[in-house]
Length: 227
Image (cartoon, rainbow, N blue to C red; front, side, top):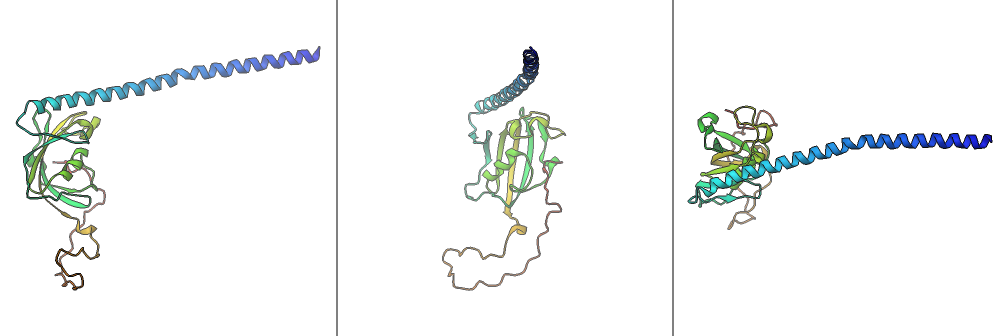
């Protein structure tokens, strides 16, 4: 009799514990469903935002049939205002690019003029500037002027520039690449490749010493889009 009583009590305790655990697990499920739903809604909003911005840009392109626009894998478009067919080299990582920049909203209203911003300097792929410009400048040649149509996700995104550029704002950026040169601070003493027609056994003439180029004050370079 005692054994049966102990067995009944044990089974009762086990049942209570099992129900309690199940109830606890079920109580947490709505949190998981809510979190998943929130993430899905957020992703859907972002997709809709990108689609709407791209639709506006495509209308601009359609309304200017005489202008040849080029689509890029990065999700922006550009056209040439002045094209330099005599040049083939383009800026690459480690170069210093010197350019002018004008920034407009997608309706063509000037946000920052060239005079506002002044001459711009960019250490290619080593400086934190607008994502679209990082890619776009590497497509340019010296003395070219290019107009870029940037959706917000490749411009300043949901936060803007905390000044004149608002959240989720598409931009029209016109860039003139004046020049680009290798960064003197990044060059090594290794000999250069032999030029065509040059005898590799001939000792090179000593170069005339030049003053060392001034290095940037800080190794962390910020966005140059600052009037």
